Structure formats: C-alpha cells, structure tokens
Length: 449
Image (cartoon, rainbow, N blue to C red; front, side, top):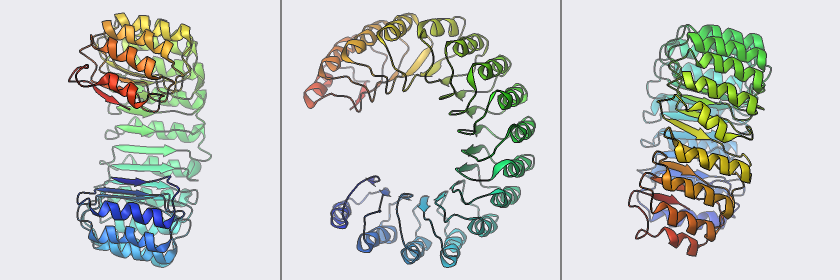
C-alpha cells in the first residue's frame, strides 16, 4: 500500500515516491492527497490505474483535480479490471464527468465499493448515478459525503434501493436530506430485502419525528444488521423511540449512536431495552455526556443482556471498578470494553487494574489517549500477570516511555493469554522496543509500535 494521504509534498517528492513504488509489482492500494501535486504527478496516478494489474484500491478523497484531469482518470478507470474500491471527491463535477462516471459503472465489472465526496456531488449527479446503478450487479457499497445532497437526492437513492438487489451498504454523511429525506429512505426499508448496513451521519434537521418514523419501520425490517445515527443531536425524546425499536427488532446487531445528546436519562431508556433485546452485539455511545449514573444503568442491563460483546462509552465516571464488577457479576458472555480518550487518574487506573485481576469476561480492552504514564501502566502490567482472559490491549496515544515498556515486557513474560498489544504513538525509543525482543516474549504476542 502506498499511502500519501495528508502528506505535504512537492510534485517532485510525489514523483520520487511513485517511481520507487514502480519497483513494487504487488502494490494493491494507492491513497493520495494531491493538493500540491501538479498534473505530471497526477498523470502518474492515472498511469497506475491503467497499468498496475494488482491495484485494488484508489483513494483520492482528499485530492483536488480539475475537470479535465478527472476526465483522464475516469477514462482510465473504464478499462481497469482490478480496482474494487474507488474513492473520489471534487467540488465541481462537469456534465462530462458525470457521463464518464456513469459509463464506468455500466462497463466496469470489478468495482464493489464507491465513495463520492465534495460539493460537486449534487442531486443531478446522484440522479444519473442512481439510474445506472439500478442495473448494476457488482457494486455492494455506496458512500456519499456532500452538503449538496438534499431530500431530492434521498428520493433518488430510495428509488434505487427499490430496484437494486446488489447494494448491501448505504452510507450518507454531512448531507442535507433532512426530515423528509429520512422518511424517503425509511419507506424503502419496507421493500428492500438486501440492504444490511445503513449509515445516516451528521444529517441536518433530523428531528424526533423523523427518528420515530425510522424506528417504526425498523421494527418491521428483517434485513438491516447495522445502523449508524452518529452526530444527529439525538436527545432523550428521540432515544425513547430507538429503545422501543430495540425491544421489537430481532435482526439489528450493531448500533452506533456516538456524538449525540442522549445523556443519563436517555441511557436509562436504552438500558431497559437491552434487558429485552437478544440480538444486539455492538453498541457505541461515545460522546453522549454519560457519567456514573448512566454507567450504573448500563451495568445493570449487562447483567441481564447476554449478547452485547462490544460496548463503547467514553468520558464516563470515576468508579470504573464498580462498573466492571457490577456489569459482569452474573454475565457469561465475553465483552470488548473501550474507554478511549478518557483521562485515567491514579485512582481510576488502580480501580480498573484491581477489577481486571478478578475479571473473566473482558477479552478486549482499549485505553487509547488516556494520559497513561509509566507509573500508571505499572498497575495494568501487574494486573495482567493474573488476568487470563484479555487477549487484546490498546494503549496507543499515551505517555509511556522506555521505563514503562520495560515494566510491561517483564510482567507479560508471565502472561500467556495476551496476543496483541498496541503501543503506537507513545514515547518508546528503539532501545525500549528491544524489551519486547522475540526471545523474551511469548511467541503468540504481537506488539505494535
């Protein structure tokens, strides 16, 4: 994979990187941020599309190309037989660009995932795209990110889903489909029997009435397994409709509600629903102003619910040990717990470590960006000596140096359960990495730096 995304480089630097990649005959992924790249280097990307027989993914979401350059790229894609994932963005798609893109989708039989972003992704483009995709039998994922898409665009997508039997994932982000657009897409869920993933994130003016309508449909839908309503200002009123749907729905396995306004009272409604739901596996409540009170509601629900295996709730409460002990007291199912971006004080880290020594249910724990220092990581390291269930631990983006790395490595010599440890973006030097030399660690343990 050649990833030049977010890279600040000149045209000459890009050319050197690309030319070096030419010696690699198995390059399968090219990600480029081409803001500062001139046409000659963009032509290198086009040449890669034409001649790289192993290239499977092309990501130009953060690249700026002229209408003419897009024509060249799209023309090259028309004959490409290997790229399965294509990500394009532009603030202006000409009529000719739209025709070229539609021609690709008519002739290309390899593409399975299409991401389109930028203001240039308009209702007009979407209308033509949806007409073509009604007869496409290879594309399985369509993702749109554009503020130019409104309720009319949602209507085109709704019509598409009534006829297309191949798409299994529709992802909309930062659109202006609003209340009526959600209604259009909700109605489609009564007729479509192939869509399994629906993401409606950062939708403007999505009110409680629209959420209620969608949830009423969800109670009748039997194919959707993943629903994301991230960043939609969902409050305690709207979340009651979601909770009611969870009691009735028997197919949804993943629900993403992060970055809303659910709060403790909203969590109480969800927790009550979880006691009666036997299908949901993954629940993301990150960024919803939930504190210890909401945590207790969830802990109580997890004693009854035996299917949730992944729970993400960030910025919780000061007594993680109480939560873990309460939540897992009578639980038989395993659990993935994420406490990312949550400041781990001495009190919190010691409480968590004490709980982990006796816990036999948590198998994966993520503590990314928790301000964990060398002193704090020692508590976790000591706990891992006695823990026999955690197989994955994420400590990336913390403040662990060589001293903490050494302590971890020494303690983990006595642990034979952990198989993955993420220490990326810490303060560990090459010398610190040597503490995890293959001769001193378990053969099963993979450490990421």
